[in-house]
Amino acid sequence: MGDTAFNDNKVSLSDFNEGSFQILRLHDYWNDCGRFARHGDFNQWKWTLDMIWLELVADAELSKKKEDYKKSLTLCDIRIEKSKNIKVKYYSLKKKQEFLKRLQDEVGKGARRSKYHEEIM
Image (tube, rainbow, N blue to C red; front, top):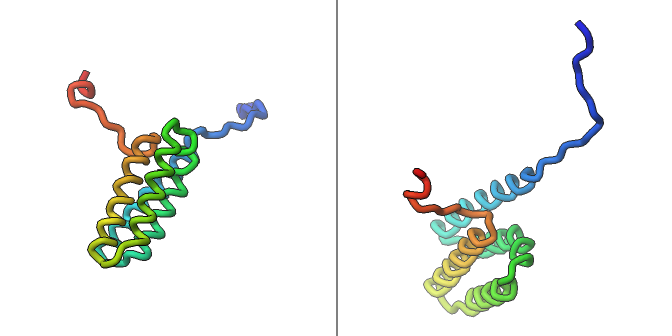
């Protein structure tokens, strides 16, 4: 048999490779947040939320709403820092997590929602 290998010397790169890894990292961070919240480890929860922001910030910066995102993040962080008791700190961390979940969806790294009737058509 002859040599059937084909090599055109082109290098193929996946446009989706880093995006997939980023989504995996985000998934792990969200799982960590749940565990830290359940165990009352608010300090680790806070740092993990910051890591989620670091994963999403590049996409947030490209958005028309980037100033709104930065303002919301700053307000979340101020609320956390000024929390005077455990209940307020829990609420503040929860609010930051809610903000980051919405941000993840808005920048296209989260859930994709569609209506049932659109899915079956």
